[in-house]
Image (cartoon, helix red, strand yellow):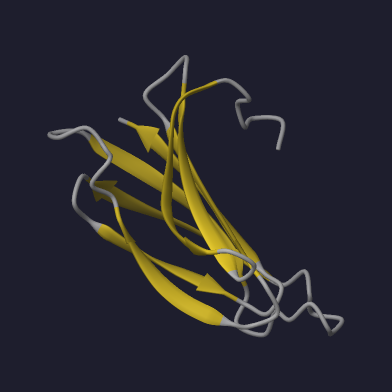
Length: 111
């Protein structure tokens, strides 16, 4: 959390439904890094986001923090988490998998 900036140069809503879920991408004002956050209601859901907002010709390292396969806000496994890293570029798609009451955070570090 301490590494997440609080000053943004761009904010984009990637998808959402009022009262159900939302996915937002924000660009750090002081670097070329982007941050994606998604949060959902009590319904589990899987979506895909297209990284068409990234700079063309540039590579990014995606640090992904997502709900574990057994995560559920109603159980003792509500804090189950999976952490992954992958390389991405403009136009790639990433899955957003939200457990009931869950969320996902992604840092897209420019290379």
